[in-house]
Image 1 (tube, rainbow, N blue to C red):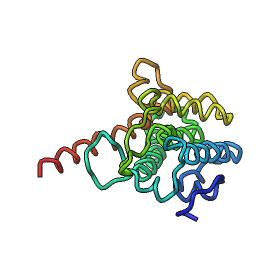
Image 2: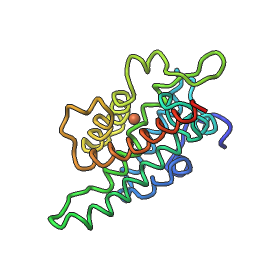
Image 3: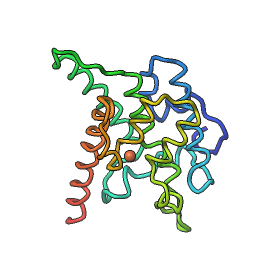
Length: 199
Ligand SMILES: [Fe+2]
């Protein structure tokens, strides 16, 4: 089922890409997150849609140079980092820290859900930022898509503010956690990409 394009992926299939989806306790939120991903996968790539294999082959970021890490691996890394960070913070902040885990995980999994819409393929099959992606970067298209599926405001906030577009906004606790996890990956990937380019 991973090689042909389908029109509908549910929780089970989306969790094959992103196993952390199953860490969302609220069943309805889990289903909504899967529904948002389903729409992004089937309508992205300049409306051509992505197969799972095509999506799995997409590099982590078009901005970080050529390193052996994929977009899907980056998402899974960030989602797992968020849970690990939440564990540490909850035992460190003796004053108490309000972390809404379901919103944190949903936000981590949806922050880049606009990327399948931002990205397209050129005539040679290379993944590029498409025309729509240049007009509307993924934090915006991600919010639009997630809003359509009834994703709560706390999670829309994480999607909206996770990247530099959110630098002027007071981020929530969950958004701060995701933003930093995201940039731990991104900054390291950029460094490794720079080193690889020198070789
Ligand atoms: Fe992002």
